[in-house]
Length: 312
Image 1 (tube, rainbow, N blue to C red):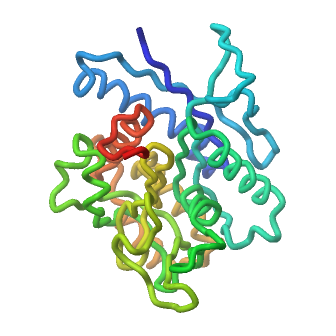
Image 2: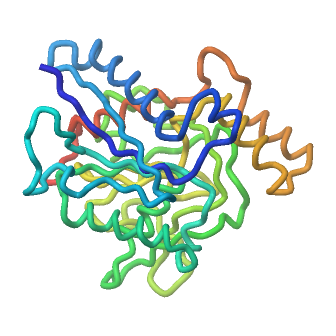
């Protein structure tokens, strides 16, 4: 028997034209790397177990196209018909908008409501987010009115953008959750492609004092890791949520096209563009980052292969 994991990928934005023509929508980028990773796991970690299969259905969020709640795992009206699609996870992609623009963005408000509904009412559905998706998860799920210890919010990075390959210092507790995927990384450091100018922040209630370590997030949430510019590089809720600021789904070709597409609108001079392209690195056959390691953690998360459990 093959175990199929069906992901509803919520396309927030469209890729640069050249990247779209060669690789398709953002949902296709995730489908490719997650299917490739599942195939690798079937030959290694899961060689003597039930093989995994990843399938993806894209949804045009800007166009108001959302998954039917009746198709979500755990819905009482779900039909077990052999041809029926059951959604095991949702994934929110990256995009250009800022979460702090939500008050002026009806489509973003609807997406936030959908995300909260899935988290609160469908505990069997796992939630993934990348870049914008990570920031929306921080905004929608981490901000608790009754939290007396911290304020969580999304803001523009005052120290500038992270573009290209950056090294994330992973939190030990997160590495311990996925030792087969991340345990081999030297000094617990993850090299991953970035393209962002916003960040999720957690500060001491009523102050500007940045919280770090386990105190930064309420239990059972875990901070994936940090960089000097961005102290919360991802969010992990065992068995429920996994988000990341970086782009494990994009290689140097994809990231280079992102730089070339946005350089004019961001007002980058040629010298800045050249610096970012150097940070991205050349488009080679072998990747220079640890995208495969993080994608392995993602597939393990989807399959429930975690050392940390929500009920522990």
